[in-house]
View 1 (cartoon, rainbow, N blue to C red):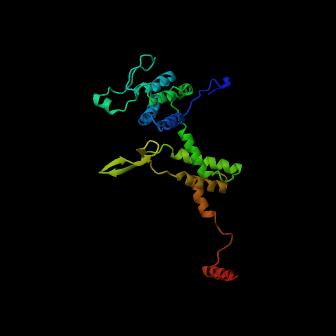
View 2: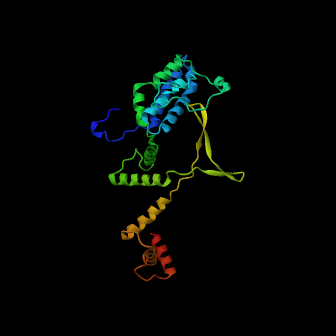
View 3: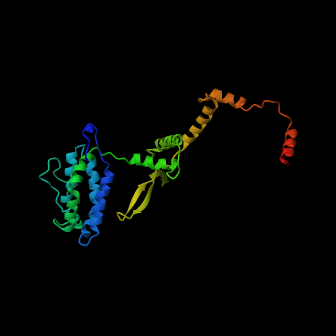
Length: 272
């Protein structure tokens, strides 16, 4: 990414999710070709290693690159790297003989391994990875924009004032419910965290997703109450003023006739 020299003081970062998605797409596409099938089982591991490298680099972009590029050696059962400056060996425990035999290691120079090297060692990718060192995601920002569409559907035209009000409502909804805790349920006398099991077509695996507690819309009631009293007096009334308002707000300007008279007149008028 080329950056204007005027903005060199600004720290530019990329969202890791988008880059991981690009890597996964390229590897998945290659693994479907004849002779490249041995690459498929390693795709999820490569993506996991990508995220691990970002989380463990400590803000050092150079170390991040070395950690991620080590994957091209790990997949061939090589776990030490003498030419690096920051990362010299894999952090996982030493494999037993049984574990080594059970893994489908890639052969150095095989079509699958060469494809992995081509994708991972891409110059643009390596250069961009240094802008992932702060481990910053735009997840909440994208979730907010998705929520905003519920208040302001793109298929409907809204005037400026309504757009501003809709964005404010979406912001309050988001801020009021962001960071909700994981839901729990009683099981054998203990609170157990709830998960939803789903099957991923992309990874061809079952995954567990956290179920969060239900959203709260109490803020809408607060807005409605506040709006009512502001419409009456131009500002929110105190508790004493609200009680006084209940007694005097709807007082009739004349004395009320007896009940039977009101009912009789209402019936007569309804005939017309």
